[in-house]
Length: 66
Image (cartoon, rainbow, N blue to C red; front, side, top):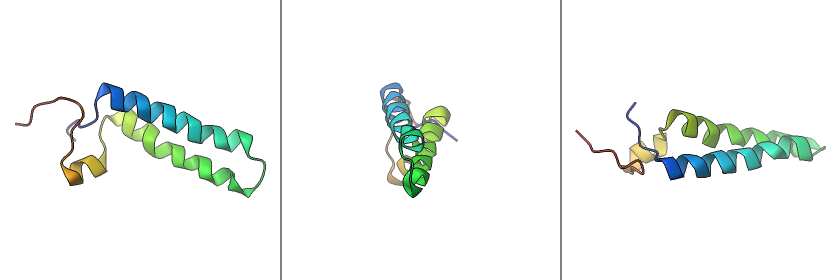
């Protein structure tokens, strides 16, 4: 895996992931599973790699391609 997610993009993903994760604790009804969507931006931020960016050829990391 080659990194394709930059620092600012990672920070935004963490903020969005934590916002979705808060749904688990704030929603008492059956919609709590919606908070599990938080795993997607949190994992992609941790790995600095987004599979959709790979498909579309997007890089926000400023890395040069070899």
